[in-house]
Amino acid sequence: MTNVMLVLGALPLVLLLITTDPVSSWPALAVAAVAATPAVTAAFAVFRAHTLARDAGVVRTFWRAWARHLRRSLAVGTLLISTAVVLWVDVVAISGTRPGAVLTPLLVVLFVLALITALLALVASVERPDARLRDVLKASLYLGVRRWYLTLISLVTLGLLAGLFSLHPAIALGLAATPLLYAAWANSRYTLGPVLPRGASVAV
Image (tube, rainbow, N blue to C red; front, side, top):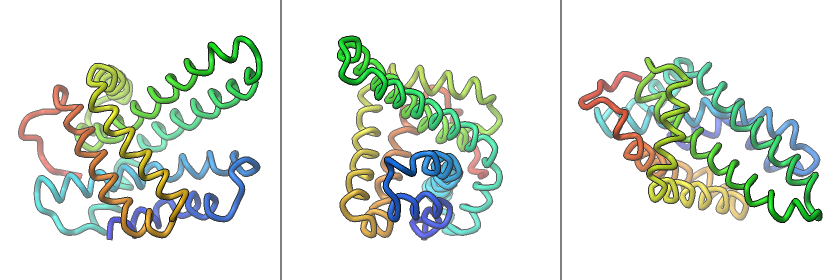
């Protein structure tokens, strides 16, 4: 059921990825990716409710969390996608040049940092909805770098999902999305352990 809710919440992005050429449709893909971010946050809320409270109300939990965390999710998604677009434009601009050989790896590292910060920020937003976004982003970046070994696991998990989607979209969306995102969520929640309160409530 979580897979179904994820597809519905990210339907514009899914349709664009399946039916268009990303090279030519990247502006629309960027907008759709931002719009899909609340669905990822809502899935994290479902994982939290099921794990900590054994709450089986997937549909109710998903859409309630989608609405509650909408603004923050869109803000995080906008930061990530805008950063990705700027870095990609820079990579294209310097490709084939002498400085490009030096700067391209640095730009890739910056994108990875932005990606893991966004992932941890979405998880933290569900765990600590009272925290300011600025504090959430700072904590996410710091812990993502400090606990790099956990970060690597999350990146591999997301990479597996992306790779599977590129080869078999139906399997990725119908079967693999939830377990792989759950693994990324659980690992990210452990990464955020130092800033999460003990015995936190399960309200989503």
